[in-house]
Length: 149
Image (cartoon, rainbow, N blue to C red):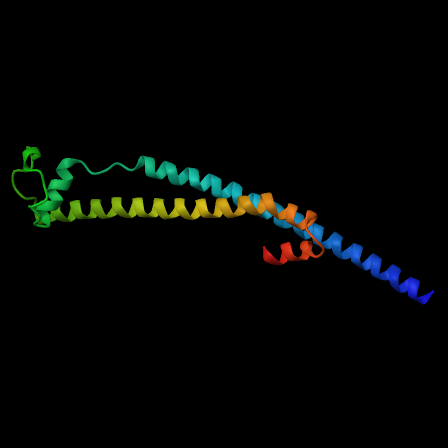
């Protein structure tokens, strides 16, 4: 009689553990789904940010090269009319700042886009394969899948 009560108590305890793990699995599934949705939205913002980027025009590139005294890599057949002489030091500072800001914008958008794509991929794979691994795997796969996430 005592052994039967002990076995019944172990069965109830196992059921409670599985129920708790199922709740934890549902929570992790919802969290990863939310992360995937947010990452997809931010990927869209990153693509939009890169699409809004306008590369410098010919006059800005030529002026920046004149400021940096780089003459050997420019096509002199396409020199803009307004840049027959080198810009002043204030103009050089303006062209350098514009170029720096443009490059930082592209680098920031590219890094944000790539990190969100990685996050989107990992969270999507976890949402798709996690519950299947936990529920249809061998004995102990529920605790393994929860501990690996």
